[in-house]
Image 1 (cartoon, rainbow, N blue to C red):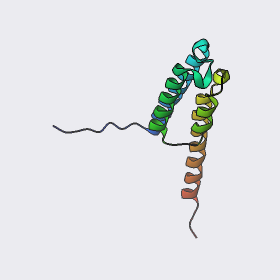
Image 2: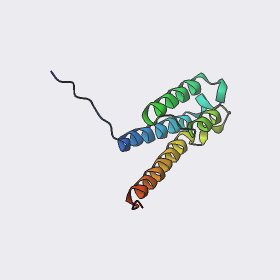
Image 3: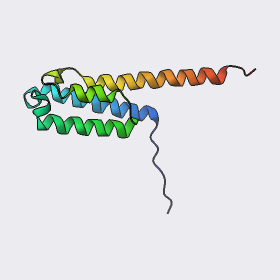
Image 4: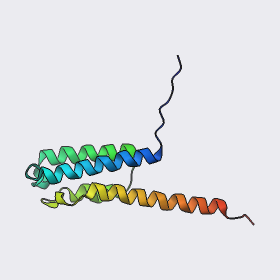
Amino acid sequence: MTEDAITITPRMRFQVAMVLAIVADALQIILLPLFVEGAESPADDVLDLGVGVALIGLLGWHWEFVPSFLAKLVPGVDIVPFWTLAVASVYRKSKRIAVAAEEDREQPRS
């Protein structure tokens, strides 16, 4: 019996992270009465903590997650899709790094 490791591509990780962020932000907008209290809402705290842990598990630690988490503690700010914006920012940054690394490989060494 062999143990086959399941590999998830970085692209798939970003796709899952983006869907998770969109669903979390949509829940906070659709179920606004449950989340409007900000830091005093247990439902908001559980959702944001779970989403933060899941995104760090999928994408690793990124500073973009800190403002998203802190902004969710402010009452009424749940109508702004901060988790989605954070994942989009991490994706944009990773693409920029990948392009720069590719350009470095293509440059001839002197």
